Image (cartoon, rainbow, N blue to C red; front, side, top):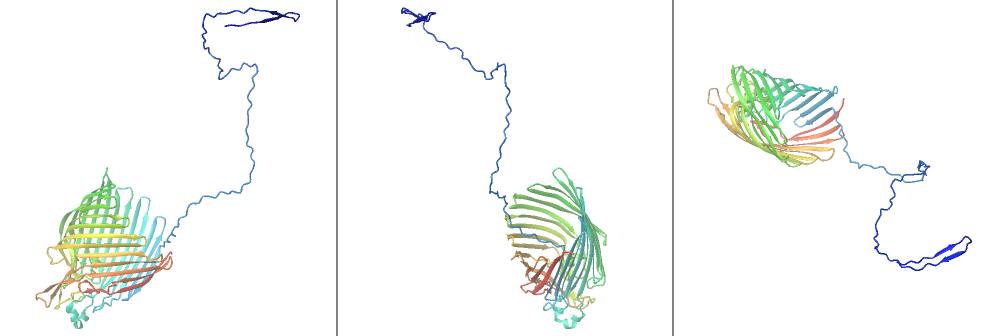
Length: 572
């Protein structure tokens, strides 16, 4: 490395002096080796060493608001409205009055009283009558049916109870003369007084308790009498208990039935008939229920005392029921086996057949068993079905059979001319196949059809008297407009058998002959029109096919029946 230096000196007087330096050569023996030293770093938080420090001033920010004119007004959000049907006004009372051909009258009055928030009372009156005038009938054939029922109910916090009472009066005529008396009516008909009147009244009630082993109890007392000094008293009580277990429920039901009655005369006899029964039973069962399966396993044990004849019988019946949901609501399988001791009564018999004679032998029917199995469910939301088959055996099954008559001697009563019915008892095996289909086409139209086939096997009687092999029905309800509504029904009952029994003279051989009653088809329709929310008018048509079919042997019914009337709803 070479360098040159020059120096200039200046004296005190300001004169410059120049020193000349010779050029020299410098030889560097050691090579240059640079090194890196630490650089000076600024500290993040420097320490102030100033003798005087100033404090930061607090800064306050304020928004300077200036009003600005605006014409925009936001609209409030609105939910889409749904059209709702106007709620139907409900009334506590209504009255109905109608008149039809055959001088028929229909009258109804229903009234309900809300006594308090928990108490309620009401009554129901109904009258239905016709003057008869059936074509081809020689005897009087008018009828009256009048009922008055009253009730009182109360629902407390844990207990609710209900009281019922009612009376009933019915008038019928034994107008079903056979061929013999029809042909000789001019000479014999004036002797026949065919009128019969029934009287009945009842008092009953029920009580139910929440959150208790004792669930419910019902009791009823009914009196039945007629114009021939017949009388009957029937007392029935049924308590129900429930005991929850781990996954099961133990239910214990009771049944006590007392029946006592008498008939003033026997058929073609002046000797009276008395009957009296006391039946007591206990029905325990275990019940299991979950979402798909429901099972009830139980039995019924009864003791029956025939106090009139000093006889006692014991019965045990199965009470088994089960159902299983295979496919939601589409397919439900069910089945079981049941038995029961049914106490027949004069009241029940005359309700089924009002043309029975007041000379009946009353006894209970023992349904030993009835095994059944079936399928039910929905084919769609609007189509439901039910199919069932059953087989059972009844001991002392009650059958209605025409009374025999004799042309030689009578006691002069209006039911002794082959125009009344007796009750006979027989052991009967019954096979039944039942089917039902219900269709809700829309909210304004529904349709249903049912059918049932029976096959009977009797033990002592030649035929299952007056029991049909086939029963079927078709029914529908429809609303044509909001004001116009109606319904229609079609009933079919197959052939039945009855016995024609005639003794020409006393102590002579009887003449027997089975009579076949043809099956019949009964078509009915009703239409109604709501004039306003209170007043409506209606029209009813019955037996529109005008078939004077025989419901019972020698008992033709009225032809086409038409009835016009009105219903008025109101509040007191």
